Length: 562
Image (tube, rainbow, N blue to C red; front, side, top):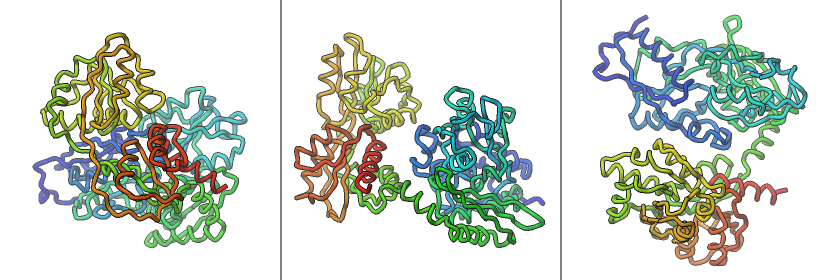
């Protein structure tokens, strides 16, 4: 079957969005090749897009927010019409497609199984007692522990190549990952054991690729690569997951295959430690794939899966029922709010600080024009990175001027903001606060330091660097003001402060603060400012980052509930 594509505008290539990993690019090229075989008139351009899961390769997917961390940015690009198609690993897609988008095609599925890769060259049951097995998946962890309760699960993140390379080190006795990814990268020879689905039931959608488009776009040639049997199978698997309401924190697995012209669906819900595994299976008509998935989910819920899910939610939703006030600037509050929601809390945004461009940027522009004159350039916030980026764009310049210098960042968020512009960060202190930079920055006498900071920041860091023998030029990168105070609903359990300035502005914006309100601070300087205004500080983050602040709140509420 061929569609006439002459009616489509072929004057420009179709832009296909993909992640930048080798596997994601292989998958995208695989889809493009299939489309070119089906419709030779079409031309394509690939656009690489970094997702949240690509930018942060240290925390687990669950900690980053679960399903969607590898797809949201691609979907946003579709909605902004920056790309025409997006290619995803189907297992990464949330079960609810965003408004305005649709899954337009699912290509034929590869091997859906998981594989064990071991430096010992043996299978799961032959590994030494107490074997260290690497995975960041709750589903894989639970099923490994169900088979090998003696095993130690070791967190493992990174792209497929990175994980396979880690499997060769003494840190792991084995790792578990999807067969399809290994085979697509041509590294199947490294597989020690293909894990049967009776031992390791896959993720819903594992091994399948999806092409996502805007809902209003009609690309009939996508039907040429759409594989209806795979689509029916993954539809019933995803319906099973949706009916259970599970995500990356809950050990849920499902796999559907064709038997005698019907769909045979297997599903599983497990305790995180593998001590209890509830399994079930149903056969049904592929035309009623959604109903089949929901029916099996209901069966497992009646068999005790509801208890396992509730227990998992208690563990994975430590902020459940808590209304938490965020005082960060509005442009920084969104990601913090998303993480609070992912942990079950309800974020209440009440910005006490607003970030604005400088009214007179000439001093900053001059510093950027002579940035190569400095031995070190120190960024004290991601806001500073954004402000510099705006000025570089205004001057028709780019970040290449930073290539020859040593760049320091106050913490990981600032470092990630710089790395997004392909800037090499040479230094991040062990504790993410300004005074730690002065203690640890590897300065030699009379080195020149450019310090880029907020206009309301204290001069303490500059003075400490000068005390170390540095010649410091301190430049305001952006302007900070207190916004107009709005009405505030005090039906709130906690308030978070991420800087001393958010504390000072908050105290100026409200008349009084209820005593029962728990106050959480990102670091000791912020906590000191809160205490000066008479606030009762419940806890201070040991790691002075947003994630450290979230961890502190989780520990606080877990302790208070125990």
